[in-house]
Each structure stands twice: as structure tokens, then as C-alpha cells.
Image 1: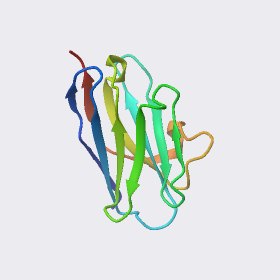
Image 2: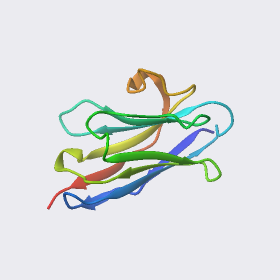
Image 3: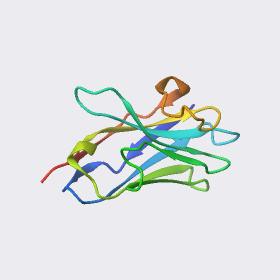
Image 4: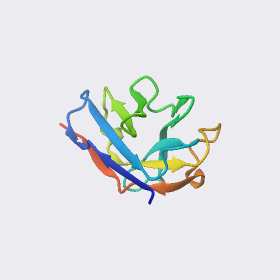
Length: 126
């Protein structure tokens, strides 16, 4: 059974940091990619970052490049999203999702991903 479980969200002040985790199970063999997305009220779901399981190649949206870092620990079957210099506009529900191949040039396309976690709320506010 494929499962993705996010954790690590919360309330943080502007300029602060959070680390999100995505624990994956049921598909840890073979090629796949894990993407992080976010969904803010009144906005469309936005691709934030992607990492390929085998090569470790990473991709970022322009809005988070230089502030967020995606990484993986294959031994723990966990993907992380380290978020630094957080801004109020980063407030959203964050989801991780699986792509059954690798991150590609259109990694941010929601339709590439077949399994999603339940989401974790990140609120950046003073």
C-alpha cells in the first residue's frame, strides 16, 4: 500500500525556519520522484520542489530557490524540505506527492503525481 505522510508544519515568524518531512512507504524500490507542493487559500496548487530517488537531482520553483532545500534519506525512506527565511506568502498547506518516474522538466505539473499525502499546515506570521 502506497503511503506518504507529511509532518513538521506549524506556526513560525517571518524569517524563521521549518523542516518538513515526508515519510514514504509501499514503493521504495525502483525509480520515483517526490515532489513538494503547496496550496494557499484562493490560489492554485503550486509546485515547490522535486527530488529524484536514484540520482538525487533537484528542482525548485523560482519563488523558493535559495531559501528551500529538498533532500532525501533513502535509509529512512524520508524526504525533507528545509525552509529558511520564511515569508508570509509561504503560508499554505504543504503536500508531498509521488511521481512514478523521475523529476522532469515539467516536474511542477500536478498531473504527473499519482499518490499524495494528507498535507501539513505552514503558517508564517508575526
